[in-house]
Length: 156
Length: 156
DNA sequence: TGAATATAGTTGCAAATGTAACTATTATGC
DNA sequence: GCATAATAGTTACATTTGCAACTATATTCA
Image (cartoon, rainbow over all chains, first blue to last red; front, side):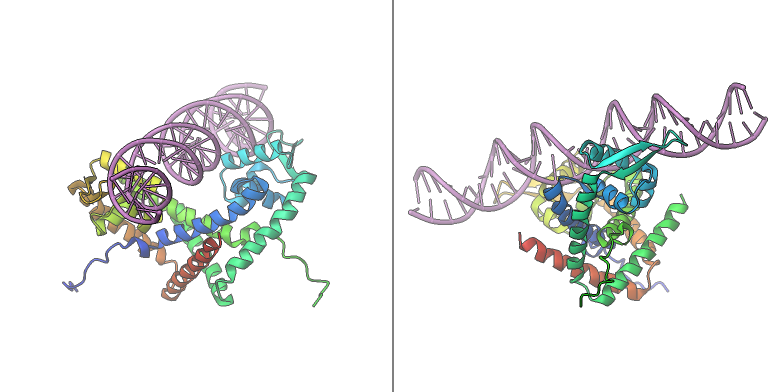
């Protein structure tokens, strides 16, 4: 104990995990969003709402927020934007008038049908950078980091 | 071939890698930045500039931008903010008057000396969620994804 | 019942960020 | 050596985002 040679690990930003994660993630998100921003004129929040509703029609805005890990303000604005573009319809819930059932319009479903394969193609291409094993590892690692963040958030 | 049962993989947002990466990364960045935003009143770009200059004093703003993966506008604003807070000093380069040598002031070095261990501690805690092996895997995976994005960017 | 509390969703305002245009200085090529 | 192009850094503007406050409806429980 008290090894006097023990230097403090220096902080090298380029080796710092949160930094590294942030850089690579932003590069990936940026490239992906350029795809559909260019072609469809929609941003990430709108795309997420479409992706959710494409699979689970009739959710409320709050349910979309939960499933998309976005806060309700972001969802509210994305929903308003999509409605304005005629891609989404709201229907007031009769049981609880605070809520709305959200569904993609026909046009919205068309967009979903075009974007979903595009997104999956992007993901497939991205995964060519990894071996099948690494893809599995990454998946598990993300789960563990999320679990860790759950714990961190819990103590707050 | 032609397996008629082969359904198109549906797009499940919660399994979609760019989405998963984005969510976990934002959680981590958010938690980390709360640490030093609360205590030191600085944001991520400023923190990155401090981290770089703490190790490499005298770089120009552009060199900081390269090493921190931020664009030059972001760096310019972070530098101006840090200068305003008295954490950083600029010295016009005599050879090339467009450039400045950037260094942390004494106060800036103090802040660096406080934040660096805090950040490393956060990283260490985060890594308790992973085995040593997984940490190595994640490192390699990030490198490969970055290399892939290099290739993507090159074809642009 | 009805006052207090909680929930769904929206809006307003301020801060953060990105793109493009701009200034100042330096390098290049004819 | 001068016109053109490149580079360092800043500024302006438009967009995005996040937080807090707000409206409307629903729930609780005294």
